[in-house]
Amino acid sequence: MKTLTHPNAVRAAALTALVAATLCAMPPARAEQPATDTVAPFSVNARLNFTLNYPAFLRFRVGTTGATVDLITFTVPAASVGNSVPISGTGGDAGGGTAVNIEVAGNNGQVTITPSNSSGGLGLRTATLSDGRISYDQIQTTTNLAQLPAPVLTDAGGTPVQPTLNTAMVTQRIAVWTYSYLNQTIPSAGIYGGTAAARGGRVTYTATMP
Amino acid sequence: MKSNLKKLAAAVAITGSAFTGTAHAASGTDTTSLYSVANNLNLSIVIPAFLYFRVGTDSATIDTITFSPLAANLGNSGSVAGTGGDAGGGTAANIAARGNNGQITIGTTVTGGGLGMSNGTPADGYINYNEITTGTSSANIPAPALANAGVANVLVLLGGGVAGAGKVTNRTAVWTYGYANTTVPSAGTYTGVVTYTATMP
Image 1 (tube, rainbow over the protein chains, first blue to last red):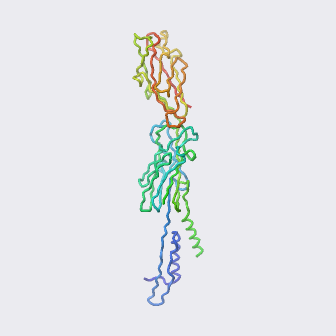
Image 2 (cartoon, helix red, strand yellow):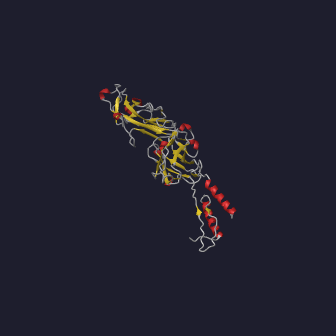
Image 3 (cartoon, chains in turn green, blue):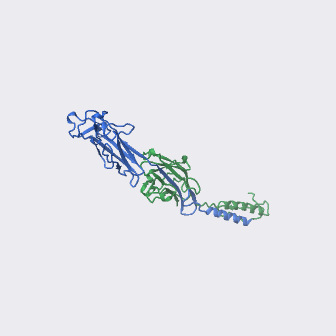
């Protein structure tokens, strides 16, 4: 094998490799020290070892990416209150507003998604406590991907779900979760939940990984 | 050159270990064990106020309850059952009251100008509406006691919906009508219309 002989060429090659390795958050590669052959036929070996140190990570998205927290609003027509015909929402970043995009990616084992909410176990309420509550069991969630199921919401939070692993340690799933209001009860007139967490309408999905 | 490389390596190291997952955002990444990313989603349900009230057949139909006392029994105070209602074999009406914005009140008015039911011939006299007795199958919806004028309002008991829903009413009952038959009117067919009006704040 004909290899680099000029010390500067060897250094340049090693430097290039070093930069690439650094960009990948890897420890720097180590090259052998330059050597010189002065006897024909000339031959100098210069080996280079690489180590790929891939870090563990967990990425999780619910709705719009970034710091924005989506608000899905269900508005029931007055003539339909409590008639058990589900109501679609608006405000989500998918499904015409009634759904949110979900993405989970991780590389260190089984991911678990656990729902909780800000209602203290009581359900959504208006600004007036005597109006009563709407139970989270009136909010139905479905998924378009069986490998990334949607947790069933309850007043207490809901049932954790586990996305299906793609390989032994890696999860990479994308789905759309669709929400609807089942409209099976007659609540007091009012606006329940919303952006004020104290009114119980904030759902927090927490993804965890070992 | 070494200096630049060090800066580059430092920048990469910082980026690689940054925790961009937040406790209250909609997306994030965690690169530190134990791995956890919490994202929020707000839900809001808008429930408008409504009032539903039913007396008799659940449609635009106005039921007619007819009392036909036997000639031999006129004025003997034996109550006469009706026909034509949608419940109780025709002598009663199904009642439903649903609303979600507070107390429901049922007011009652009658035709006859305060005189009672007429057969179209004033000279024949009138039958007082208080000859029409009413009863209810549920104390949650009392049946107004009929009179020629000044019929007292009744209140539908709040509740019947989800526990704790303070402004909700969801009640049903059957109101039964009878003819008291305590007087002897002129012969004829007497008619009247009772209008029940439910109101809610």
